Each structure stands twice: as structure tokens, then as C-alpha cells.
Amino acid sequence: MARATVDGCDRPCCTTKRLADIPPALTNDDWASYAPHLTKAHIRAILRRVALEALPLPPQLADDLAWFDWIIVNISGGKDSQAILDVVATEARRLGILDRVVAVHADLRDSEWDETIPLAKDWKGTADLAGRHAAAYGVRFIVVSRRTKDGKRQGLLEQIEERGMFPSSAARYCTSDQKRAPVRALITKLVDELGGPKSLGRPVRVLNVMGMRGAESCGRQKLKPFELDHGATSLTTRHVWRWLPIHSWTDEQVWDRIKASGVPYHPVYDHGLTRASCAFCVLASPCDLRKATRLWPAKAREVAALEGRIGHRLRVDLSAQQLVDELDAELAMRSA
Ligand code: SF4
Figure 1 (cartoon, helix red, strand yellow):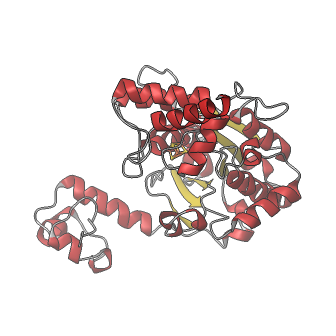
Figure 2 (cartoon, rainbow, N blue to C red):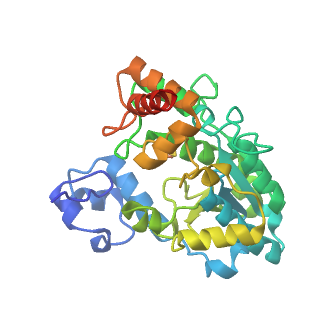
């Protein structure tokens, strides 16, 4: 059985003695006798975790969005993020704190359903739709995207070409590099915008709201609906909490909420797709990928050409080239 590591260390003394066994307020000397092999970096990581876990919890969340200085709603343009925006903006308006809500769209550029594919009347692409969602609720809207070391914006397909491999469930760099990192950079800017902890006399409190639901996958079922985001939190400048307000919702509840809002939703759903994220998401179902290929053959061919250049497939069980070949065979049959 794989052992869970404790702050990067998988030696028995660390994996068998859990955090609860560790006496409080340890100094580095205490650590040296407790587990002599630990490096200073291990000790720093463990002490940081102990300190993070001791942070005061926010009050009951449902009544207390006002406890936070910033409420960041991650909106992809898809149905789940549209539902969370409705939930958060409705509550923030009731509390009179709509100005603290920022809707952020992580734009994956060459991987998103863009304006070149005429999906619906007035369609101008996913980022534009996300902006219209934010406008419908009267909240500030910011688009972020990945930047390379030399500061250039880089879409997901460009990044895949540079890395020479597609992401996968085991190596999901698309989410960490194209979404999480740019949103964290935005959090830094928003913290600065408030003048940081100096002006508030305490670390800035940030609520990062996301649309993951347990019904989507086993992995997502295990996510905690509310927790401190250790990676994004700094003890002295900002405390970042992650909230998944619709984690327990069904598809039906999501659609009911969207329909009741009257705000337009992403048109790919009316074309039979179940998800509206990257047009050729490496984690999409084969059925969705086949539908996406019929809907946007030019993008499917672009992804297939990329596979050819890097010698790596979109998925182990299904390549973009296969999707294109299937489509071509279908078209040839129809025209015969
Ligand atoms: S939609 Fe799929 S390919 Fe795109 S970032 Fe998310 S997991 Fe990666």
C-alpha cells in the first residue's frame, strides 16, 4: 500500500507519526531529536503546516461572505461556473458587498471554443460569454492567461507543443499552469490593491470559489467543499480559502438555477456536449470528443496535426487523428 508522505518525507518516522503526535511550539532543535533525518526545508514545511492549521476558521460561511475581503469566482463560461456565479452574486448583493466579488476567466486561448466556430447567433467565443455572465450580475470581470518566462501569452495547444506531450489525469499541467497559476498571480495583485496586510492590520482574506461537483467524478467526490488553500496562503499577507458551493448539486439543480436566472448559457450544450471546457479536453468522454469533432472539424485537424508533430496522442485510448479519420470516413460514406 502506498504510504502518504508527510511534507515530502516518506520515512517511517514521518508517515507513522501524524501531525497530532507532534508537540506544539517546537524549535528546530526539538525537531532534530524527533526525526534526525529531516532537513531544514522539511522542518520549515512542517512548521508552516502546523501554523496554517492553527489559523482561525471563518465564521459560518453561508451567512458570512462579508468576512472576506475578496471573493473570487472562477468562471469558465460553462454551466457549473455560471451556477456558482449566480449563488455568490445573489448572496453578495443581499449583503451589499458585490464590489468585493471578482469573476475571473482563465483563458486557455487556442483550446477554448472561440469566435471562429459559429455555435450560435451573437457568439463571440467563450471568454466573451464569460464576460457577459459577469456583466449580467454586475461584478468586476478579469481575464487571465498563462504567460511564458518572456511574458508572452501562451495557449494550451502552444504549451503542449512546447512540452511535447498532452496533459493527462496523471500529469494535469493544463489546470495547474493555465488556470491555477494565473489565478494565484491575480490574487497577489488583488491583495496589493487593498494595500496588503499593512492597511488592514491583518492578512487579507480571500475566498476562491470554484464550480467542481462531486457528481462529476470519484476524484471530485473526495474534495472538501470548504478548506484553506495551503498553496495559495501566506501566513503573513493573505489567507486564501477555497469554496465549492455546488459540490453536492446534481446536473438538474445546476440547470434549474441557470434557467431561473435567465442568463444565456454556453451554446455547446445545445449541440449535445456535456462539458464546455477545452473543446478537445484530454479528460472528456469519447462521446463528447466525437461530438466536438463533428462540430469543429478544423480544430480537431489542428489537434491531430499537433499529435503528428510531437509524436504524442491526445489520449492513450483515443487520438485526435482517430477522431478525424472517423469523421472523414463518415463524410465519405455520406457523399458516396
Ligand atoms: S478542460 Fe481538460 S484539457 Fe482543459 S484545462 Fe481542464 S482538464 Fe485540462
